[in-house]
Structure formats: structure tokens, C-alpha cells
Image (cartoon, rainbow, N blue to C red):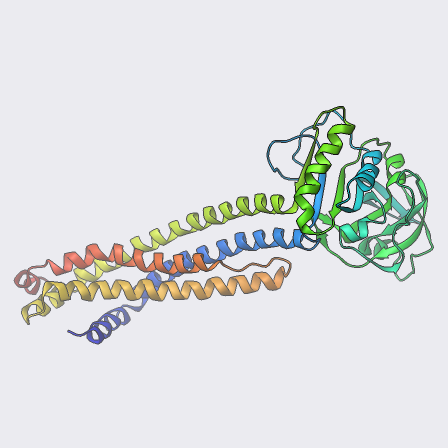
Length: 401
């Protein structure tokens, strides 16, 4: 019996029991589709995080109050004995040659109002350098003025969404709005930017950092973003920043300096492990599908006992009988795997259409592993029924009803 004979014989047998075959195919397809879709989501989340950091360049240091021994994640740092102040930010700009731009950050929440329209927004206090450090620009008007950090001015730059909601059909530049208890003149509107490093830039109000510190009655900064001249100077600049703060804070190292690659690496490791975990969970369904194939094949063996006896009687050996049933199992698992791959890819395409910001696509290893696992599971669970068929006594098999 040639290989083509085996394929024709197995395909004919599967085609003769279409409902049973279809259910087995569906079980295997669902398992493969789950692996492909879930790993694509995990990989998409990892790429999204990396793209977010890449969008603001690769030469950025983030100075965070508090000391942690690990690279950590921004916002997960314990309290600090000393505040980081505007004077610290000014010292960074003056005393470290590798530093190109320094953008101190103060963040709070306030009501912003124009006439009868009012809404609560995130208020970010910073300087003119914020535009270059965070890669934002204005679509109308101008950005925050270049003034002394400690000097507050009653001016503001609105995010696109805030401007649209407060000034529908009107030109906001030049108008007076109230931010909390402060009257401020709108000097610009940000260009659309979307979510960047967890902040929706279209839904914020920017004010000078000195004004923000008075508005929220703060002495300490939330963060300091430091842009370094070239990526080669990133590590030397980081060490100099740590030494400078240690000198200014009475010999105590009470800050954490994060580099983009460290933060990206942390997120990448977490999301990579998550992708593996959800892929493994989805792979369990392939085992369930394999058990389904085994049950189908066992039923097929019991229904085709006389057929097996006839094959043995005309000289077909045990190995060929074994090969016939293993070929059926292999066809079921391979066809189910390819169908599942098509379903998974279609689901991903639909998801990306709905959420274009998420670059979801399955990693090549996940696609290969899903197909290999589906094929392997099919053969593994098809082995027992095939072995049972091959061991049937031809005389007893022909006499069965």
C-alpha cells in the first residue's frame, strides 16, 4: 500500500463520517486559534509598550524620588527622605555637560472651565523643554514660554480633546479659562498625540511648572525627565545624575534614575512571560481536542472491525493497518491545525481593525508551536486506537457483527 493509497483510504473514511470528522476538526481548530490569538495579544501588548518608549527617543533618563535596588517600573517607588525640587532640576541642567534638556514635571487634577462648560482634567506643570523631551507639538498658537522655572505665569496650553470640548466651533487661543481657582490665558493647543507613556496627551492641560507648584501647593516634583546628548552618553550621565543628587541631599542616595532600555526590558520580560503563560493555558485545549480525536478513532475502530479483518485476510500487515489509522489521525489534526490558524489570523485582523493602536500579531514561534503541537497531539492520541486496530485477530474481526 503506497502513501497515496493511504491518503485516499484515510480521506475516504473521514469523508464517510462527516459530522464526526467536522466536530473533531472544530475541537482542534479552536485550540490552535486560541493559542494564536492569545499569544498575538501578548505580543501586541509588548510591542505597544516598546513603541510608546521609542516614540520619545532613546536618550531619556527619568529621575524618580525614592530609592529602589531594582530597575523597577515608574510609579512603583517607595517614599523618599528628601524631595526633588526645581533647584535640583536647575542643577542638572547647569552642572552635567551630557544633559541637553531638563523637563521637571508636576501632576495634579483640577477643574477647567470656560463659561458654562466645565470638566475635570489632568494638569501637568512643566517647562518649554517638555515639548522636545516628550515629542509633542502645538497645532495652533505657541507652547509654554521659556522663563525661569520658579516663575509662574498664568498661561496654559490645552490638549486637543479639552480644547474641542470647551470651545466647540470656537478658536481657543487668546481666550481666558479657569483652571481650579486660577484665571489663565490659552496660548496654544496641542497637536493630536494620543496616549503616551500612560498619559493621554490630548486630554491634559499644560501650565508652567512654577504655576503648577503654587496651584497644588507642592514643594516636590513628580518626576524629572532628562534628555541626554546622544545615546552613548546615557550611562555616564546617569551616574553623574546620581552623584549630583547625592551631593545635594547630604550624601544620601534617595532617587532612582531609570533609563528607557531598563524600563522597556522590565515590561518586555513581564509581558513575554505573560504571553508564554496564556499560550500554555490555550494549549491545554489542544490536549482536550486530542482526547476527542482518540474517542473518534476508537469509535471508528469498533465500527470498522470487519473491514479491518478483511484487510488482514487479504494480506495487509499490522504495520499497514497501524499506518491507515495514524494517517486518519494525522489528517484530522493537520486539517484542524490549519483551520485554527486561519480562524486565529482572522480574529487578529478584526481586532486590529477595531483597535488599530494595538500591533497584535502572533510571534512565529507560537504559530509553529501551535501547528506542531496540534499535529503531535493528534498522532499521540491516535496511536492507541491505531494500535488496537492493528492487533485485532483477522478471524475474530471477520466474525464480528
